[in-house]
Amino acid sequence: MYNLALAVTCTLDIRKSRFIGCVEPISDRAAAQQRVDQLRAEHPGAAHVCWALMAGGHSAAVDDGEPSGTAGRPMLEVLRHQELDGVLATVVRYFGGTKLGAGGLVRAYTDAIAQALQQAERIPVVRQRRLYCHLPFAQESTARRLLEQLGGELLEVQHSDQVQLQVQLTEGAADEFLQQLQTASRGELRWSDVQAP
Image 1 (spheres, rainbow, N blue to C red):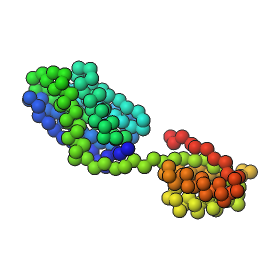
Image 2 (cartoon, rainbow, N blue to C red):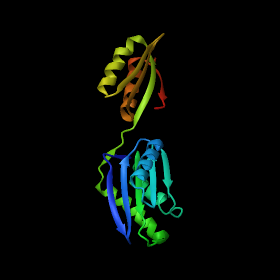
Image 3 (tube, one colour):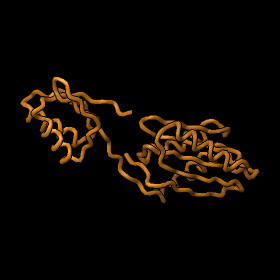
Image 4 (cartoon, rainbow, N blue to C red):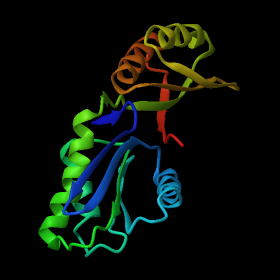
């Protein structure tokens, strides 16, 4: 999966209609909706502001008054085909007076996003994993040293009958962390995955 480094915009003129396509990194649906509202405010004369979203396993495809399935879904398919996540695709359309038909609309919305993506810098998405670990006090320094070596982050520490650590690492590093800590604690490590907020 990939994300985008920066927002990229592309403009197409097709039979007197102007299609302003944009792809940009976005965190979630609420942020996407806020961005779409901002575009509507910036383009009050536009006939449509259609959009598609892939973010954290959630998706959306909005035609905004275009015939059903001719705008949002084709844009979403481009994002899926390009293996993108955390990305919002928008197309602002200024209607030029000539109807394009369903096929023409699908091509126009697909092309606006595809051409913007050709100029975009893709960044591989590095999946993070959060762990909640219980281990003997004697292993706390080992856990902290190992976490630092693997480029992880210590999020929370609690002391009770054992040390309780909440940590975050990349998926591959998390497996290594658990394996080495299990060996160091002679099987006394207890852990669980924590759902990231």
